[in-house]
Image (cartoon, rainbow, N blue to C red; front, top):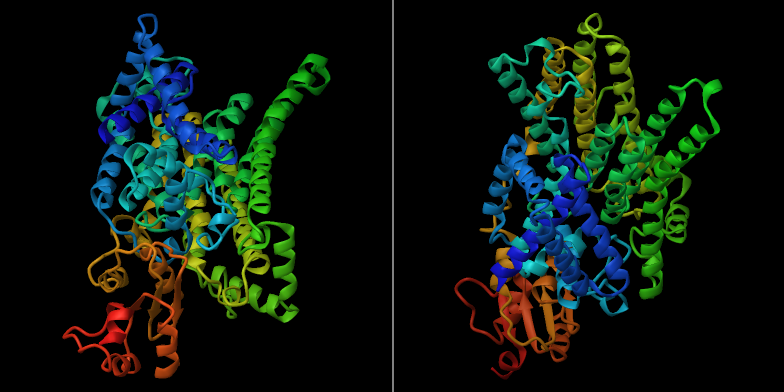
Length: 630
């Protein structure tokens, strides 16, 4: 049955892909647009409380489109689609990367603290209840204002595969690779040598198969490296959405760059991806702004390219219509964000002011709670982490890499300044845009610490590496996109020079940031982990049992993991030292089971009165009735 459902899902995805292909959407952009569209559709379905019905409808419609495209009059067009896909080196590179991750994710047990406080919890809750979280889940969903875009797409995939932690990771990786595949829109295409209207990549050398092969290898290496960068903000073996957000931001930029000569198509194709950015995470609003501003600059350049005195009224109307398309890439994501805030406000008692909510009430309250001295302390500490210390020495590896990439790109374009018209000035504009984007992103992260985080986390810049690596990875990929955008303006030998420049950007970052990238290919170890220890300790079959959990230290990560492993029972509590034997004994009388997650001298002394000491210690699950009777 699962195999049949998976086959149905695959046919449906192919049906939508064929329709996009028929509408002349470039093949490399189809997966990003298609998967983003599914996430947007699932969000709408969640608001209407019809998630499972929406999955069935999306599948039926997709299969219908596939059948229609395989009809006699369109079969040849579908055959061209499959031939083009199978001949694409980018597809095979991504398929190899996907196979690697599927192999490691298939039966994995998720580690990582934030999975158990929210991301894994909401995925499991969606699959069980087939609806968006509401007041009934208030004890389970602690971060009620977090946007559910990633979890909704995972839910759609698990509609076919069933729930498991490995399937959830594979579903998220599928969306990430679909978004990251948009980079391959800049890969050299075989038909360009015969298509006189296409941009000239190879000049007069297109018939030399060895030079063409070298050029292709360099190009695909750069683009594959860009995909790896996008996967690197956090480990792919967790359900945190930071890498997913970086992929969505870069995919939207790639779509806009690919269709920069057709502002309407660029806006229309980027729209679903921009909406998905905001559905993935609050920080997605930054990438929505980047997409919108980029489109505005392209629109202004298009307007200035005409003689203002010769523009007719019809042309003015055309420019206005085009601007409306551009404006939609900002307005519609904000509308979706507003709909989510309304859902949170209406379905949770205090969801609109829950942790990390983007409501004005919550942001104002968190900002006012901090004193002026607190705000200065947070700003100074963050500036030191991100840019320079007190001695004006660069203190951030991220910033060092950005500066190094600037130097490499600058030298590359300087050497090419006499070989292509305005290439150096265009390179300077590219670098300026990338640097401004990075600085603005860093300021946005600082604003998050000031307006959204409490005083336990903000002064120490909690999760600094994770948050800043999103902007860092995005800027690296934006440089790669910019370099490939300039390639059609150059002859082949000069294009190779710029491609090598891009290789240096990529190589410099990899060489200096091996630890950062290592997490992409190294799964979390289960053996010896806290999760393994807790799973050995928790042995419960009664879903209605009440549980008292004891650990010798108060570690919030462990408490969240225990709650997840206990399946979020309503009747459970946690107890941490200091305690007296009398108070602990009194507390035990109100529960069915006693779970010792971590032992110490106190609990060993207490348990010796009731249980014979096991050889491997007292960590485990005990029936309180049996324990006290003995």
